[in-house]
Image (cartoon, rainbow, N blue to C red; front, side, top):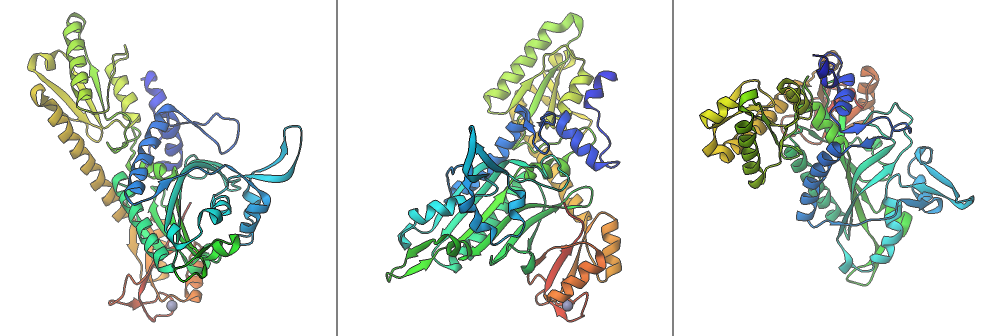
Length: 481
Ligand SMILES: [Zn+2]
């Protein structure tokens, strides 16, 4: 048993936080031993998963007319400074470069905390007339934030290694509104493909980026009962254009401010995948993003070694030729050890090949979410394996859906909200839309409102949880990261 220790995890139900860290480090996603707090080394396995995750995102962005760019990672204080006017305390979370080589920097330079300022500085030269609009660009870059709250791998880090930020530019506010809808649609598809269930909510106006029109968030709930923001889509209107003098000439020859939006996601998307699908044996990766979709494990007996190895290699080759991401594990480790090793990495299928299988002309396949093995005849190998991957994927999706539904509840009064939150859930309630009612709820409950579904109760209004007036909105509250 001691050899399995490297793959042993604290049970997820017992201590989610410990389980989460252990699974990330023991499965080989991140190395936590880098000597800067809140920054992690991405190991080849972790990087391969993130490449697949970002691959889905990039596909969705390209299909909708967004083009990838790269803007420098350093921004002068005078350029970034215009953004400070909007967010109080923003400069305190910035990494500053104050020395250049052997001397002091003439002007402090910031390590990219976000890219609005960096881009807008240049875009005023790209955008001249209405013919230059709309413009839809994105980049996937690291961003730096000096987090003062406790750091957590993938969730709260000081170097966000995979920040996908989309920035779009439009002639009219109406077009910016449509763009936000498109951004939300892209995020919905993205998380559907990752099989991460979510709520789509609008941020309360007074919690929105100061001066922005509105902000739509996707949120999910983690197994410890805390809400996790998965992505945001923000409609800035002409807020930034006024600050950075970003204008265009309309058809009548009049100068107008550009309307802008931005939308971002990060490796938090992977945090949600790990947290929601994983179990006590480790990761359970959706086949779409699993760097290894299946592993062939030869289990030879001493006197029958050669035919077993030969058969296992043949199976491996056939699957590889079919375009599947397959590995073969010919190491000398015992089969039990190999199962643990591949299970913690979330490999969807394990394919055993032993003397029985060679004789019978089949392989024995175990899904990551099940113990029992299924026999697949060699002549139907590829179809059989593909079918099992699909079945596994829908099982995982269903499980995630059931999990999510079990963690959401509708409350009619404050006691029901408290009860739900202490049971590890998020609670929804009817809200009239008035600021004072929202504040009353937050004061009573002691947590912030996560957002609201605008008009979700239209036509079947319920009494506001505070003032009792007929309310069209459904608001959500609970603990959060
Ligand atoms: Zn009210």
